[in-house]
Length: 71
Image (cartoon, rainbow, N blue to C red; front, top):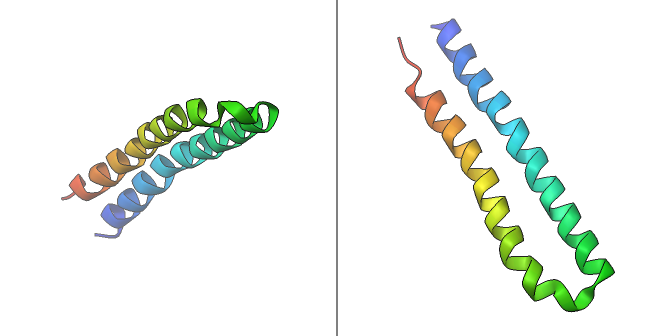
């Protein structure tokens, strides 16, 4: 039982590190681009939100895998 809980914790923990870093980098680069060219904010916002959503979906996959681990 303890091994299963450890596996679930590792699956969601390790599976969330990548998306967290990706969303941080996406936001940082988008703000940097908007800072350099403020008129392009409208063109940058939609692709940034789409990329952040795709990165977050990886964390959701990790959560699904964590829930599917059983005896």
